[in-house]
Image (cartoon, rainbow, N blue to C red):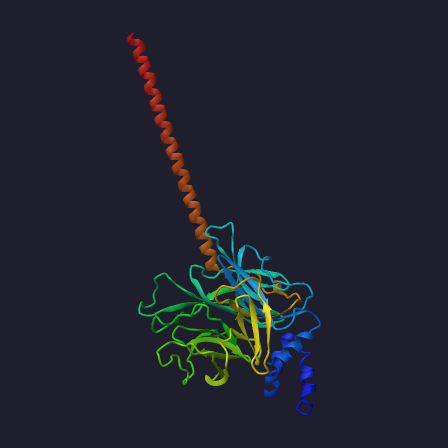
Length: 423
């Protein structure tokens, strides 16, 4: 391929299916860099033989309701207005928790007929309205971070990691804060608890609203002390990543800079904006195994919410539309949202076609664990025992009432007989 002109190579790569483009990026660095540009992404989406949604899902909140908007710098694939909706899911108040690169999403809804609106977890493909229920994790823990990774497409296999906060006193030392770590594997179709994430102090927590960034086979979250929590799906372990050595977190006045995570050219990126200055630094971890950071960009703009490509950044304009700025060649495009946005929305990169997927072939035949069977039998026996006790108590009090009634009637008869004899 090195003997072919660059135009021909890019023409060949533009015909790759959506799921195969990532594999072509290991051939050579120049071609890998070119495939991250907006021009290639638009060309590749146009040549898929069917409609493709390539952009972002914005999940916004208005009072107690959630609204879902799809925004993209590309023109919509349909002539008529198109809106993604999660109304096909069971339950009420649907919420997206995490989105995979192939368009699959982990969602949570509320059961309207259960006490305290019990949650319902499911995996779905919003473009085809396919969904499948999932077992519940430990819902008594409040979720602080969740991510999904597709292990294989054929057959479909995925993993979901969930970090949650346990508000119940536990065995962990009170001088430390920690997070509960759970992993779901579609191969076993079960949640299992991994080692807790233990922080040295109470400054260890996932920043509220911090986006989950997937890069190099791991999911990442920004912590309160500006370090990064990483979870490796391959080895199923978590670790901490330090920020760049020359990364300043405060200005001369002691004010903290705005810091957030992003994905840039498929790599982990850390963005920083100084206080009251419209300038953003972008640091990229070029060598993930060695944890080496490199300063890649100095943008003369406010901190973007996310990067659509290596030359296009996204931000929110007037809370009613998404603004895509090409900071290399210049120019901006706008994509309207579904209603006004209040606060910073939840942002999920979204790339999906409209072809049905094999969701219903993922769950294996259900096999109950002997311990689970014993727990179920114990609960059933306790329930039967309680019902028997209630029934015996009922008959006992009924018997006592009958004896009391007979005694009372006998007393009345004796009294009436005695009074008649005395007359």
